[in-house]
Image 1 (cartoon, one colour):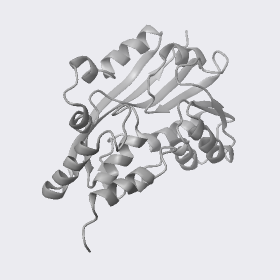
Image 2 (cartoon, one colour):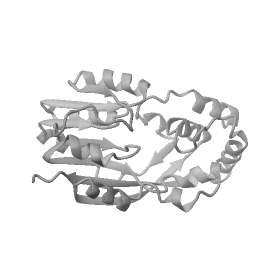
Image 3 (cartoon, one colour):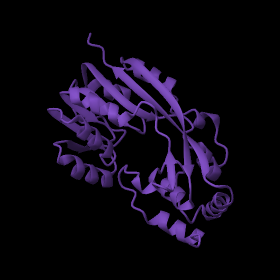
Length: 259
């Protein structure tokens, strides 16, 4: 089979819908190693024991849906928040069948729930953890269990397009800074783990779709604006094989003290 052209691959990457956090389209054309702790499976165990649970910045609801299916039960009270309208609709349709109430709530807005409502708050890859709000809605003794994106994640790709970034930008999302934020809000960090993981992009279509989907990586990304760099990267992949980057992930297990 004749190799597909740059134009064909870019057109494909630009046409794939970006709603939700289902990354199955990338199979065979991009891949990321998974953290050793297995977040979604671990979350299922937490949900199985929870009476009232909240998933913050749920995206399209895919991770919560998987975890609830694996848990085999739904907590008596369960809700999720999401700020991007297409994801609100997708999460509502997906999670509604499990009895999850999906609230449209901007990522920077106060959580639309009363104090001390939940014994479990979860989140996978929140843009920013709002520790004061997490502490407020947790019941005494309740747990925040989440996987965060760490510092410098996939920056090999980001800096290919943007050039070298300042050290302050590279240090953003530092887990120790986030630990300090949690403790300042009166929470106790029970466990904090961090890993750096290999990511591979096998064609330029995967790069285009990734940058359209994860919009904060290269702000304002469009094919037209970055066409010369995209073409250069396409030729590099064709000559040398997959473009390799590294993601950064950390796991938080945080508790609101009972006293």
